[in-house]
Length: 227
Image (cartoon, rainbow, N blue to C red; front, side, top):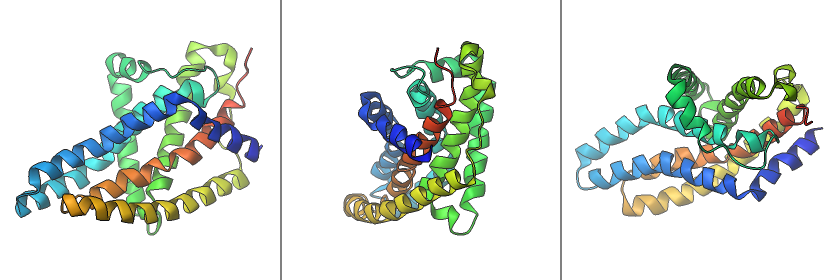
């Protein structure tokens, strides 16, 4: 079942909606630090101040962007539709603002907690996987309310120890790859915007966490009844 989930999870990259959602995620997570870097490049004090501000805001920014991406792609991730639900997260923000605020607040707090754990704190890929998996598991509740025939409420959320170990190994390998690519990209960015390289490394590392997230979501989707 693990390899079936891997294949189905990787099939997400055959959908053009995945790349649009990823672009939105990158714009949300990279756009803010790049704007900060642009306005602070001529002032060392401003660079330090805005850099500290971004480090404080980045967990919230990443949590918000991750929620938007995960909810938008949830129909494809769970295999219940062939298209993304682009309006779904924004409708939830309008009609269920308290629920969304609690979700994003919980993910932000979890990001701070993960960041304080030795070794794991630097694994942004693992952070995305853990927080995204929690989000897609929560989305199952809405799926069950909208279409009880799918039996989403009966789905198991824990895939088993070996399955989780496999996902963690994938996350670890992606973390190593991310570290290598981030170092190169950070050097390039720093050559143009001094001090902005570190800001770029965080969202880039997080983006690679989509792969184990897609695999977990595919496993969840395999449990749903498709009438």
